[in-house]
Image (cartoon, rainbow, N blue to C red; front, top):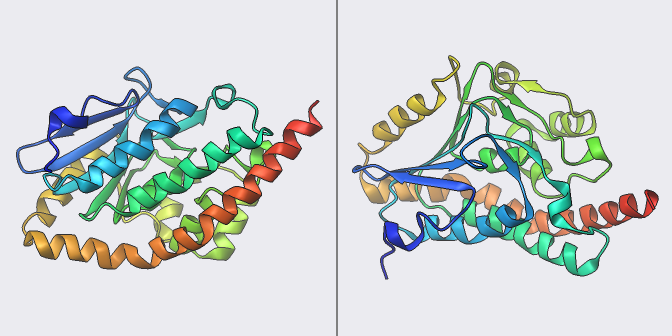
Length: 255
């Protein structure tokens, strides 16, 4: 059954979905229209959202971006509850795997347009076919080693795939902001543009890709993402188990 905009476009509290007449879907992360902070509710919603986006063949190109001049800035830790509770972590674990698999299963070109801070779940952006970043953009991982938790949710898998394991390990063990220019030197970012221009450049690229036949576009995305998808399936469930154990230990140490 073909999905329509009324089916899911307004269904999610932290995603603004807009699609133009050409089929370019812009997926904007936001919190009340401003910069997005990850919560347990959004973590849950994203599983369904990216599944629906992937299955909707009216989406010809997908652009991931953020509101308020940022991508994803921080995490509202309290919303997740007690991370040492196996039931709580079981849900986090399952959703974490499913979100990445569902983004990887988007079978059309995906472009990430990064402005400002991509400091949480930069792995979402690294699942894109191409990343366009403003020269003011920074990449960091504030949600794992920096707070005492193992980075097992896919951030190592995606960064090691895009930048190489040595760079990824150093980046995650000493989580300092990485500029768009350095990320470009590492091969993670495809283009660096002026501040405020990432989304418009992503749209230009989307229109360029639309010149190719639809099956060609879809099959190219499928072909390009397959090696990373295999790593996600192989590594992220295990990594999230390790992350959960470290999160439980962190909670215990603070009691």
